[in-house]
Length: 93
Image 1 (tube, rainbow, N blue to C red):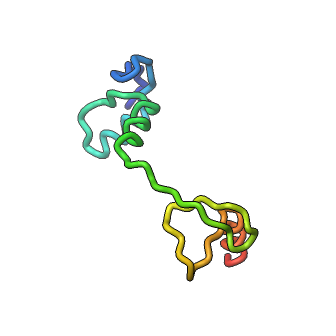
Image 2: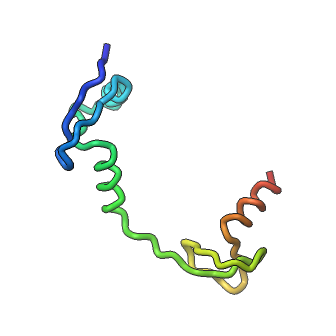
């Protein structure tokens, strides 16, 4: 029923494909307009609206390496680097 369409991004001017699957998805959701921007420009626009996440530096309670975390570390709670945190998650599963 649907066929791939080539559209022009209004942001960067590059061509992009509006696939048959995407068209079907748009129809299911009730969207009437075709996308105006390519995926890269849509993603860039989305992240530009999102405020920059503040990161904090802490010392990993397991290995002692520096860890960057998106929350303010507290003295009474251990903080782990991403590698040690992943290992702990694996062991719990």
